[in-house]
Image (cartoon, rainbow, N blue to C red; front, side, top):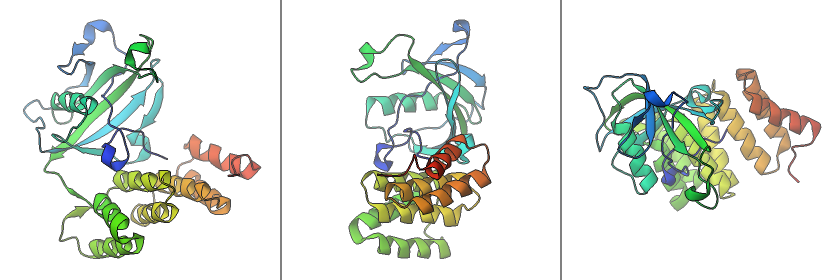
Length: 264
């Protein structure tokens, strides 16, 4: 499944301000970023992240009624972000919010949804909640996904595949292979209609994380986008096998089985 747009623009995901679960107004606090938040679980306030450090977070997204829309827990991986790299106001606000949190804390941040006409046009009741858990933080790891995507764009996907194999055999360069980052790069290529590159990244994820339903779901999306419905069905079926609770995987499989989801 395509990762919700919460990561860095450079990895094809848009950072948005963090939001919160519904709480009574009396329990809400104001962040220097301008957002409101509640503390679900206090963390170690003697350990807070600073610029230059990479944070590892879990995110649960809920709508205004508190119904869960998406969760990194369900996806099976955490998100990573390096503080001090913000380029937009939204990114800067997100960093302010993250720096409030002690290690292990779970905060809920609440922000209004953006309308197509601009924030000032969005209904006052239109907002989302983002429960954020600060799992850990420390020195940034080197991203294998970023390196391989750069090689694919400059030297071709075959060169990227060779480099990936080298890094997997010898990790002395210290590159981290992260499911979420590789997945995001795959979707970036998919959006650019670079199907060979997208499939190469999704295939890499399948080889690295064979027990993750998400890697098969993503690869199914790539096969479907290029018109290969049989391989798409096989991958969606594998995703459902690994995670029978994955309703969106089952929906896509059912649509293809009935012929309704086939690419025209």
